[in-house]
Length: 393
Image 1: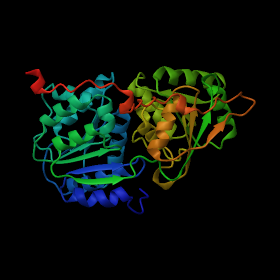
Image 2: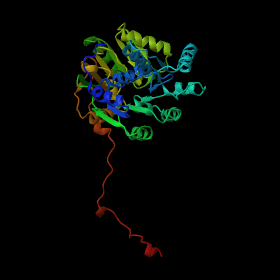
Image 3: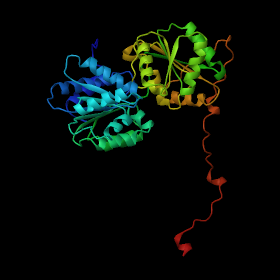
Image 4: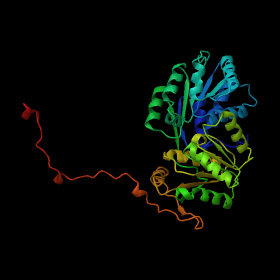
C-alpha cells in the first residue's frame, strides 16, 4: 500500500494493542490513526480460529464507516478476514445485506450507532464472541448525541474484552465515558489541538455578501488540485453550490439530507478527481481521507474551535502540503476565530479581499468577546453584619 514507516501514533499504539491492553488514543487528524488500530487487529484476527463477530468499530458517520471498511479490504487483501459496514439509508437491499452478514457472524463490524441498534432490536446480533470494541472519533459521537446509544450497545457486549477509544479531544464527557468502559488503559496524547505542520493557514476578512465573489476569485487564481469547502449548515451548502454552478464552476454538494447512494457516488467521483470542488457540511470533517487535497476553505468559521482542526486536517495528510483558508465576517465569526487561535496557539494572518471585490471589515474580536465580570473592592461594598447562629438564637 506504499507505507514505508510507521507514524508516531502507529509506533506507540500497535504494541499496546498487540499486548491486549485497553487504550485511549488522542491524535490530530491525518496522523494514521485508522491504520494504528487496524494493523494490529488484523494480525490478531489472522491468528484466531474463533467463529462469530470478533471486532466492533463504532463511528459517527456513514462515510467514515465505509472508509474504514475499504481500509480493511485493502490491508487484509491476503488474509481471510470478513468485514461489513453498518449504516442507515433508505435501501431495503442494503439492510438485508447487513442483516445476513450479522447473522452469519462476520469478523469485523463497522457501524454507526443508530443503525446498529436497529439491527440489535431485531434480535439476531450476537456479541457473545466479541474480543475487541473500538470507539473511533468518540468526541464527535458525543457531540452528535450518541452517548445513550453507545451505552446501550456496550451493555450487550462481554465485559471481558479489549476496548480502544480514539478521540481528537479529551473533554470531561470523554474522560467519564473512558472511566466507565475501559480497564487500566494506556494513554497516547499527540498534538491534539494543532493542524499538521504541512498546512499553510490564512484568513480573509470578508463581509457575507462578498464571500461568493471571493470564493470565485480564489478558484480562478489558485493552483487547485481539488478543493473542499466547508459550511456549517445544509442550507448554506446548497446555496454555495447553486451560486458556483451559476458561475460555471464544476462542483458538487454533499450533506445528510442526500440519499446514501447519491452521497457515495459524489464522494467516489470526487476521490477519482472527476470534478475538483466539493461543498460539504461537517460530515466530511472527520476521518475522511482524500488524496492530494490541495485546498480547504472554511466558508464560515466553525462554532467549535476543535472542528476547525478537523476541517483543516483534510489537507496535508501523511506529511503532505496543503492550504487552509478561512472567511471571517464582521460579526461573531471574529470571536470564534479568536477562540480558534487560542486553541492552536497561533495568530494567523488576516488578509483583506482584493479591491475589485470590495472592502474588508475591520478585525475587532474584542467587540464580540464576553465582558469580564467587574471585581469590586471591599470598600465599594456595604456589608451587613454577619448573621451568626448565636445572634439567631
